[in-house]
Length: 65
Image (cartoon, rainbow, N blue to C red; front, side, top):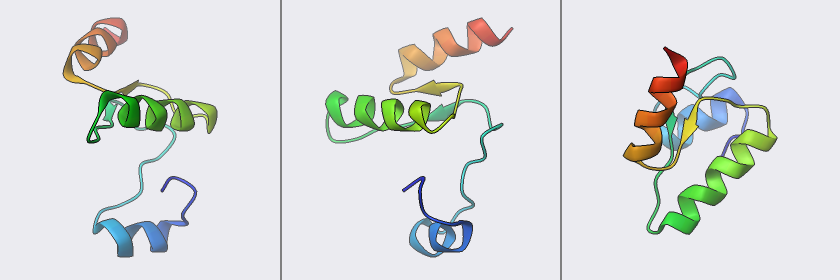
């Protein structure tokens, strides 16, 4: 998904593609494994401030402050 160009992303998901400097990006899937894999891929692409569940998002927000 994150490898799609901006136009392809908008066409597929009807929203703008996340930018590298976006904060508080949350991934979810049918299992924790899927969301964890998505976070790992996004992290390898250079994205930061990622979470794969709401507990992680809380920790992420605390680190940001």
